[in-house]
Each structure stands twice: as C-alpha cells, then as structure tokens.
Image 1 (cartoon, rainbow, N blue to C red):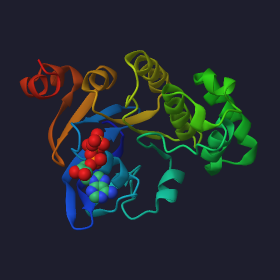
Image 2: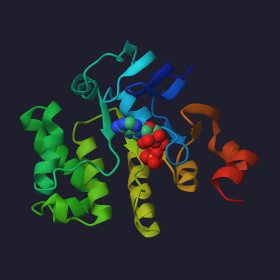
Image 3: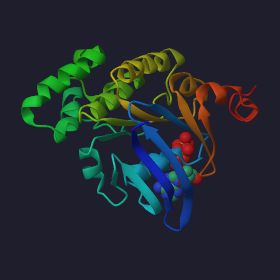
Image 4: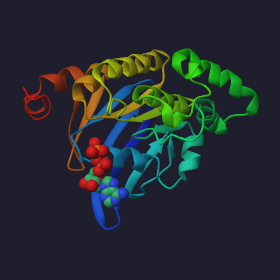
Length: 237
Ligand code: ATP
C-alpha cells in the first residue's frame, strides 16, 4: 500500500463569485513525481494556490500527511513541509541571490542555514557564483533556479512547481529538468504543473489532465502519451 502524502478530495475554489475549480480529486504518494497538465487558463495555478491556501477552497478537503490543512494559514502549510515555487518565481528582485535564499530558510534554525545553502549550491553551482548579484539581474534560467533553490531552502518534503519551463529556451528547459531529476533521485515528492506536456510526461510517472477546472483524465505518463485525446489536443499530432 502506497503511503499517500497528499490527498485532495472534492475541492472547489475560485475568485470571488467565480468558481474555477470544481470537485477536484487526486493524490500523490511519498517520493512520487506527479504532474497536473492542461492548457492556458485550465486552472493549474489556481490549484496549487488552493493547496497553499493562497486561494481558499470553498469545498472539499486537502489532507497532507494525515492532517486536513484546508483551513491552515499558508505560513503553517509551508512549515509542515510544503514548498510552493510560484509561476515566475516571485523573487525579491532588489535583494541578492544569497539574501533570497536566506529568506527561504526562515523555517529552519540559524545554525542550519549554511548547511542548507551549501546543499542548494551543490545542485545549482551557478547560484553560488552569482551569490552577491541582485536577483532582478539574473537571466531567465538563473531566476528559475533561484526560485527552486529558495523553495528548497525551507527543507520541504513536498515540492510544488508552477510551470518551471515557462518562458525558457529549450536548452534551459532541459537544464531545469535535469536539476529536477536530481531532486527526484534524492527522494523528494514533487507535484508539477506544466503546459509543456512533452517535458512533463517525460519527467513524471503519473499525471492528471485538468480542463476547464475539472480533472478529465489521469494515468501513467506512458499511457497518456498514447491517448488520442492527448495527442490531438496537446501534442498537435
Ligand atoms: P496559465 O497556464 O495561463 O497560468 P492556468 O491553468 O494556470 O493557466 P489559472 O491561472 O489557474 O490557469 O487561471 C484559471 C482561471 O482563473 C482563468 O480563467 C483566469 O482568468 C482566472 N483567474 C486567475 N487568477 C485570477 C484572479 N486573481 N482573479 C480572478 N480570476 C482569476
């Protein structure tokens, strides 16, 4: 029996009176790497924000490691071990790379900070090289690495990534996914949302397809890649 880390059960959410997500159900097991795929505006970002409670759920339960976190403050959710790397990274552009990473370590005691930063620099050596540079002056790929690095600085057990390939040239997307594969090998549980379905399905074991705020398909990546619906609507085949 797989140890389910996250269980999303019948969740709905939206903005004001507008409902975006309806009756969303999915789960992620320990050390699993799962994607939510879907086109522009399907509700992928809203889904991660609902798990972090940046957008409150109007219905349903979100159970993380056995606790219903649906009403928890985002800050507490982060302390429980969920890191949410938002679209575009949400970096502090006028602060250095080092300061951005340091901000990410706030859940941990001071004497761990150097150890945590060293671990991040091992995965992303370019961040060590750019330690004193302002985050706003980094290249697109470096910004994405910093955003992921800052997510890791809280020492999460569960990493949620919002479109890590967004706006990057294919070579950089390859590099980001290579870095993510290192995290996968280290045993981190990852929930990834992506518009770039080719990349996502090559990286994850399982995925859910979100369309107009509803999950319409789920399966192993290998099966989804063979699906006529996926081929026609997402891969242009
Ligand atoms: P994209 O890949 O373009 O970011 P997405 O699948 O992540 O798409 P969301 O960003 O979750 O989709 O948006 C889903 C819907 O919610 C869209 O119709 C969008 O216009 C709407 N929406 C998103 N943010 C807000 C907001 N702050 N207020 C009102 N509506 C919003």
